Length: 148
Image: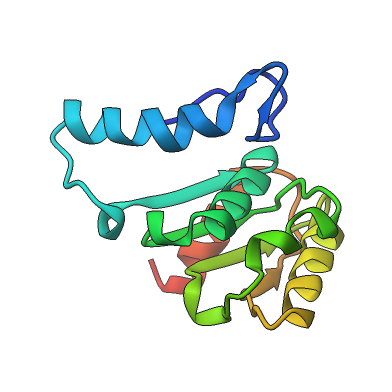
């Protein structure tokens, strides 16, 4: 498990506070695969993000779909849906391996994004869970539904 820092903004974009996106995509992933005993390549990468990390996970999953085997965005603190739409131009649902879940805090934001993407022909599986904004609650629910 690798947990990077986004220069305190949580937006996972290159901003004046720092190159969070470049650090993650261009430098951190290759560094981990070169320095640690992990299988390299997209087939072995799962990206999970919660809250602001949920925004980052879905953003990276949309912008770099070939980089991850799967993405799980959990109660993501999504930006305005319009900011994600350019990332899916010319693509279809089959290009993405993303699932999303929303809860009490950000469920409406996540659902709004999922609906906007669907209008563009990109269907991202989404489930609302009436959960407080605690990552462990979503993991517990996922394990319960998986029978684990």
